[in-house]
Length: 324
Image (tube, rainbow, N blue to C red):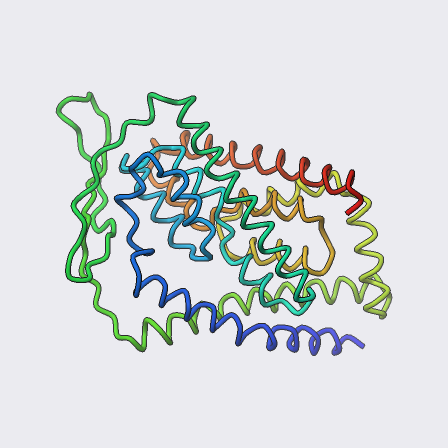
């Protein structure tokens, strides 16, 4: 019956929610109790692409936004920006870790393979781009590190004419901004809101797939699942193209959809990776701020899409050849 679809979706989401909440609490502790949330100056050094790729593997969407802001202000290179973007998986890793659709061992393999491959691809692509585009490697010195718990942030963003460059636009970068939040907001309210948001996306995805399977299976969910899986697997060479387009959507919903679809067997691992490579969260939106930045941002988005599709096909081909 149709109500079984709703019950199954609610059940799967309810199982997922406590784990999501705990993961976000740990992320907040990681961000506010360590230096991982303040890596701005290190991102301008020789090891910047490696560090950027490592930061991208952390399921914290703020890193892609931070990298985009630093790049707009010419504080990091294009290679470092791409390293962060490529390695970023947004909410996907959390979904794969907590989803009941995968066995524990499959979760470990999937998360380690996804994070590991994207990490390597991130810094490799970053160094290659910086090597090829040497004229874009020059960056402006970053401001001095903040003290007394201040958080680096772009507080004022405006454009002005530089005296040494005709009508060339720059943005003022204010390094430090005092942020006063209670511990309840930081370690309880914020993780709860994030967990609820992702859970809502997961519920919508579960409902959509549930009704799709229900309709295709003519009232039988299991039959519908078998038919949809068979159809998607038959179109394995189209998946990277579609998944990479989904990944370009600047919202954590796209990464949730890709991870959930992979978990239930709807797409291949390489196809999921293709979509997650192009998915840089809200960071891509930051690049499109300002009319004169649209061309550059569009080229970056196009590179991400082509790179994601290429990786997706390569991974699927290797898996197919290996009989996986």
